[in-house]
Length: 307
Image (cartoon, rainbow, N blue to C red; front, side):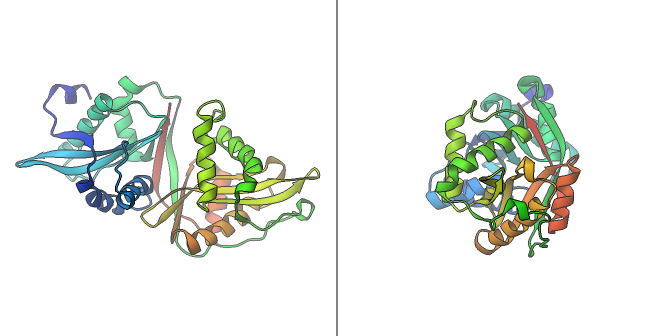
């Protein structure tokens, strides 16, 4: 990283332009599951004609100017699409230049997320400036399903009087929000209602309005509550990335996650995107067993660095 700051960089980071968008979409399409988040932002820019401030082009010096060599999206989370380069020295130069530009041009995000090999390499280069990390999850299993889910009926739920899984409605919001917050605290480690509450609540309302939040109600201690929920957190390149799979703590161990997720997957594939993906910590054996049973296949490794 230090050496990259002392030499003349061959790559730069610049705000994306309209002329970059088609090439960026092609770059994301090289691995639609891995790059669903940047693909979502590129497709939104193509559809709206407005390039978001967080979309950056990686440009390589060429004889007559600079050509597109990758992209970075820097929002609350940062992700990058960088090509595989056969020459090890050229690949090292690319990543060193991108890391130096990240430090020089971008603010530290809440997290760095993406393909493990790339993101951990970039993290190692920017850590002296952006560190320390609150947590580094070095291996998260990336999974996909593009066929009907395997359905298994939840067991021992007669006392819960569960409804069918369905799309959430805005009148579910007040009951769905606490479930989302509970999941977020358990997964990310802090309460989003204390840090960025307005953005978090608006994001949930957006997912509900978009038909991308799925919910199942049941009865616990005489109260109708959310017993299962999941959202399509990212959508791009024909891939719907599922976030926030959660089961009420008092309803766990009965197969609600498996049955609920299978129902949500079929609805997503029918109406939202043909391929459904997610990623999960490699140490979460219970979740991995659930996703394997539903029909997901393991296709890669993600990493997340949280600040």
